[in-house]
Image 1 (spheres, rainbow, N blue to C red):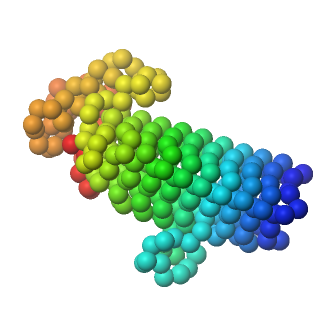
Image 2: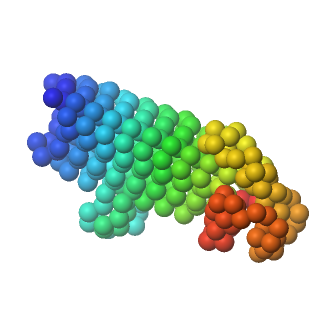
Image 3: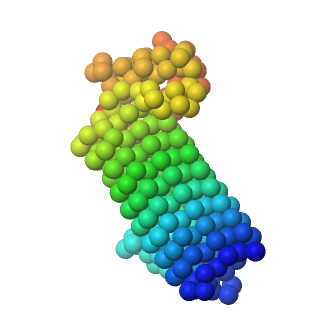
Length: 256
């Protein structure tokens, strides 16, 4: 049985999973689906066409699934879909998508700290940490195991997997996977060694990524020539192939 505080306001058509805990003064809209075991501490608002998986924990004054702030909004049905076992701390805001049929997506096992903002059409992967006040503009994609400190990410940017963004950084181009990016404007400083070790990346791959970093960011080569040198001289390990593909498909360019 769900435990629902008598002051909570829940639309009768909302779907509440087993063993959910909904605290004082929470508001749940008509088209909301909560998976089993979710915990809403108090004063949480979830509205719009929003679906959460199992065992998500949401702290006071978070707002999830409400209408986009995008001025291009023309109406229609937009969605917010969230996976399992995420933590959303105080005052986190996650907005629904802008266009009819579009989705703002959050994966699983993410830790989103106080005052963070995920704008319309964001795609957030899994096992991501967003530190206090980190902000993702519209259409940003963040890949798995990334760490974002207090930073602002420009719309349509990509943040590669196992990368780390330093505090107070301004991100206006793509953040390459496996790298540490910092500054305003942001630049790629080195490989994210601690993140790679924590995620079990081999020493061989770390050595190759360090050399790839030098080709891309320290030898004064064009991106095209740096990629060609990586492909010609480095072992085509999965991590190297992933980095090369990310760089080749970047539409905004990478943070150099």
